[in-house]
Image 1 (cartoon, helix red, strand yellow):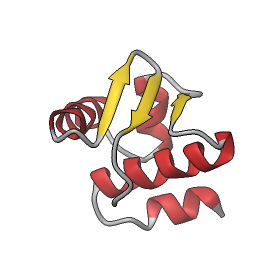
Image 2 (tube, helix red, strand yellow; image 1 turned 90 degrees about the vertical axis):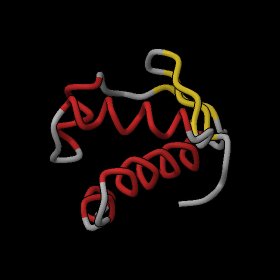
Image 3 (cartoon, one colour; image 1 turned 135 degrees about the vertical axis):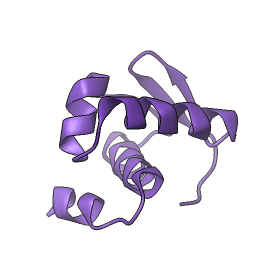
Length: 79
């Protein structure tokens, strides 16, 4: 059901943020490590790796997240 909730989001940005907020909730922290590499994350989200990388860069540029390899830090609490 978790994956369905993620995949029903309209945009890749919403899919990523939904997934990140779920991981943050599971870890009870705003900083966590992704269990996937970029290619696996893209497959999980039914997207292309290049699109995922581009959206991660945009989210970071918009100060929504901070990316350090597989480590993600949520900087805001909005979808």
